Length: 537
Image 1: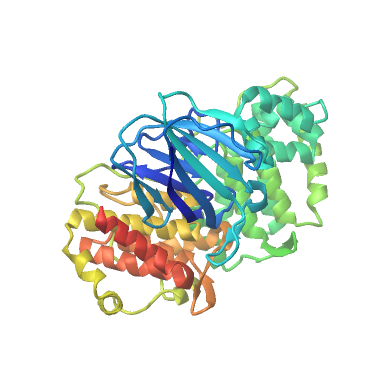
Image 2: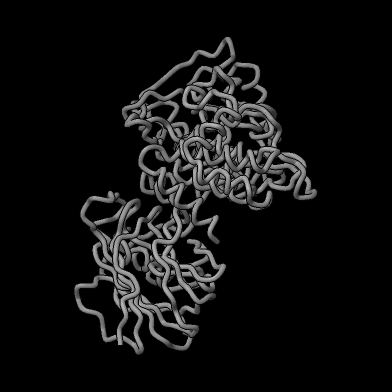
């Protein structure tokens, strides 16, 4: 017997959606740990994570329940994988990443095998599909009783899934690496990550010479590239820059303001003698001074080889497109001179004993009700991002929210303070996901700081806006307000700030305001469905 439990459209985000039972919640990373396949994650007990081709929007889904193992899937299904699943409750819900369950269905208590059949992944890859647009990728999940067993890959034909599968298998990955380098792959250390491989493809002789030179020479090449960038940008003699360069050359920790990238860039912008030179990089104007300061930070990477690759690459950004080729020639000359001066035998990194810290997170554990972020505004009035924020007092924003959602706001005010705080945090996380800010580590540090005596930089100093203005904003995502696109990131930052306000009730309502503003015209209902879902569980 075959029972159709669900058939319809499911909204996905970040290439995924979930099936959840009991108190289990779907995640991406943990779901696929220890698995051979990367399409259906069963690593979280009681939950399944489905990875899809569409990045944002709708996919087709059919869920079936059978008494016995199904026959071999038809050839219309391009990719087929299987995992084991034991429900943690009597019901299973299909959940969208930013919403509540699309549907719930009963599943008798038992151990199950689940087969995922997929088609259209390559055609849909990284695209968007609106609610009224034709579906591109389709998925079928079939459950049947079976003893737990390891996950299995039954069939893979999609380019993206074949490539991902081979990358997870060390032996297959080595085969592909050899093929990609026409049978002559470089040393593993030159393809250990994206930067190393990119640099090696850019100039393999230079990359191999740097590797052979050893840690000391690699570090000195990184220093050379950083200093060259400071000179090319015309800022090397500025007082704060000169102090940083001296510390770099002396193998000492960098002094302020180099300890805080946002502050570092702000100091440079405010310096009366900053020449403010710009160059063209890939068709865009690039601030030479800012790029040169960043190359200094790259030069202190804990791995000296990565430091050399990063600092030379950063120097290319300082000199612009016209000077990029000359940078590699100059780097080869500098490397040869350093090898001659320091000797051909590899020697230890001169900076190995210098403590390396990412931008600071310093706090002490205390009780869960202490240590909220200091009160204050998210952005100063003269910050360029301030124009996108609602300037009205919080009480007025809450009053307008209550008028717009008269049935919802009283229910939110009635729940326990701990639940209000948790929901405020979830709304802020959703806002960060919608804006792309969840990919910045210091944004996530804000959530980790719950229950600490002080918040991490830049939140503790009110410099969040400056930090984000000086960091590459992933995707430059916008949100529509009355059809007009505006940047989403200031609104998401405000949601984070509100979520940790001193009053849990106000934190929840103001976080909801900011999350709705981040969602804009197109995703407002997704946020409201998510809130309704959290109130119902």
